[in-house]
Image 1: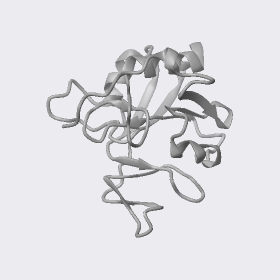
Image 2: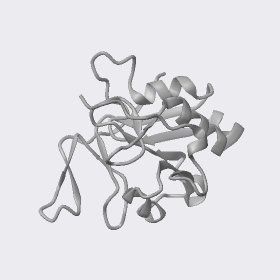
Image 3: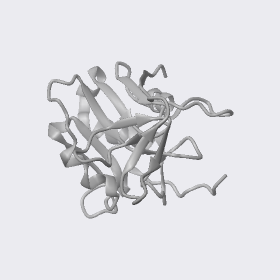
Image 4: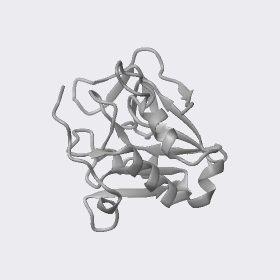
Length: 177
């Protein structure tokens, strides 16, 4: 198991900071990540149906540990309570009636010894009424055109440029905090 990562606070996010919490597509997609995360360059081009009833929160999930992380190769943990506060700050009182899909690798994966999945832990910190869904496996959006693709595992093509999802689809799973 890797060493614990230093933890970010809400104050670490914003203009002029190394970490961002920003909306795309009229608020349908909300990203919490490092400003240099390569996934960030794809988010403006993700195909999102404006009639889709879901909002999408894009945050890296830990490959080894049940935690939110700031980047594909993480330098910091983003604590669950910080993610919850950033979401509430972004959506205000409207969050209580929202349906949010957590676009987070391993977001709904239960690891032995954990007190719940990452999505369940987040659900406990959000106001009552928020409906969350998450994927058990990995998420990739590094496609042309970009879209969210799920699978149990993601492998790289021979050029190491394009992620190819393999394994069983990691469909959205409703979250009960």
